[in-house]
Amino acid sequence: MKDVVHGFSILDREFFNYIIDHPLFQRLRNITQNSLANMVYPGLMHSRFEHSLGVAYSLGKAVENLANNTHKFEDTITSALKERFPSASETLMEATIAFIKELINELESKETIQSAILAGLMHDVGHLAWSHVFDYALESSWLGLERAHEQLTLLLSEALLHEEFCNKTEYNKKICTRALDLLNIAYRKEQKRNVCVAEICADGRQSNIREVANCILTKLLSSSVDIDRADYVIRDSIHSGVTFGIFDLERLYSSLVLALTVTENKNKPECIKFLIEPGILEKGVTTVENMLLGRLYMYSEVYLHDVVLAYNALAQKFITLLLNIAEDDRVCNDDDAGLTCEVINCMNIITELLREGKPVNEDHITCLGMLTDAQFKSLTWIFARERLLEKEFKAAPSLKQYFSNNVSQLAALIAVARAIAHRRHWHSFTLAGRGASKIVRKLRIDKYRDVRGRIDSYNNSAIFAALHWSGFKALGSILVVRRNDLLHPREIDEEVRALIARELKDKYYAKVFLAIFVPQELPPNIEDKLNKLEELFVNILHWREHKQKLRLSFSKLANIAATTVGIEVNSVRKQLENKLIETINKTWDVVKDLQSLYS
Image 1 (cartoon, one colour):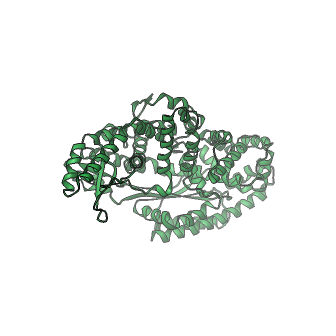
Image 2 (tube, helix red, strand yellow; image 1 turned 60 degrees about the vertical axis):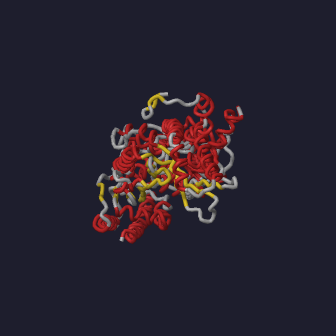
Image 3 (cartoon, rainbow, N blue to C red; image 1 turned 120 degrees about the vertical axis):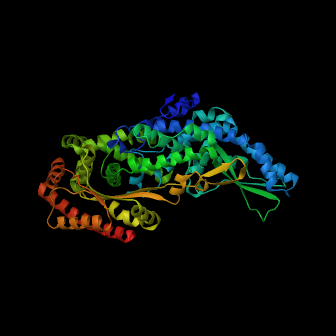
């Protein structure tokens, strides 16, 4: 196949016949890589499908290069070990050297490389509509599900890797089982912080080579310089039309090597203990710095672009509203048709799968095909246009009845859908830099649920605020291996020529984003509170204001909501005014919390 990042890339034909062509994998064609970033960068229309193919190919190539490059240094490693442990017994030294050679051979084996490729293929299979936006919605809704796409990836991989392909031969069964092991190591919370440790003793005891190799493979899939990140930084850069993220991937491959760090083992003098993880040779420092700088600029200019954050906030609010509506069993019944009821029913089926971890069945596969970008984009158009919404209510009488009793929820969906479909923006305030990093760190550690929850839990309001934060650590642990000192790798920021790494060390880049939906016509006394809110952000928190208003008057919103469900307009208007007042008060409380975090 021909890929924009890797050129001609080759994957095993059986992967296509049994894995890639499966409906669970093909659905990734309909899930964009970068949520609603294409509203700002129109070229960012590529999908999780091509990214997954790219990671699979790239991971296989990285493992092969890592093993081959380390293999070239076997004799040098042997000499270094004898020099480092002059008093070690001959038995211990022979066992240690044999272990390292077996580990390299294990990494070079076809089974290991094919298992890594399979894990790379499956690593994003659990993503739902608008990628990470759906994750954030599941977390902020009544469900409170964290890291949902990782959990769903494990469930879907379990289903996919127990079908015909994996049972075809004993070899296939081995690589499928191992690929699942890799994904479990990468995505299980309790295993994420594990380091790769190898211990070899003179009496024959030693670490399991397969387990150490698996740990190394997961580091290649998810770490500071991982193949997943390398692929998406280049791919997103190409598709967005910017050049920040393009770096020499082939040079990175050729620089990969095992970093062996000897640790003190005073309690067991008859044993040698290593920390082992993927590292880079000195020649790769410039390439890695290029990648680090490219990733930094992709975040600042693309992923954390203010308008991208605004649209992602809108999309998250839209999904969260639907999830909270879906909680009520009376919304849709078996006789209701229409896309809204189909999506709501499928949301319930998939969230039940996530909560209970049941085996994946045909109903799940069908519903996963519904929870894609195309369906949710269609939903925004339905709620954004009165005629389409009226048709939807004709097909689903129970849905119409539900919204007749919950008009504020309908008004909220209409407001968000129009903002997305018609490219309108909210009032929004964005804090970036050190101030944002400080707030994000505190939100992540202790007050995140408390502060964001106060806004996100208030999902019935037609007039509401949406708080988002996003950030990333610019530099994690990256080990550089010097040819003349193979057993003492050091952090990249200690290298003389690593100017960028030293600058990025201990830096955390973030943005805090608050969007407030403000119609043009407001009830009395509300405008004063909004002015105070704006003054607080601009003068105290140094927030930048974006002045583009959503062109939808308060009265018009009330009229639309009332007309579509056939109830009296004035009662709707009063209900929405009350919701507006409550929301402004809640937003005011959150602003004061943010002020205390910032100070």
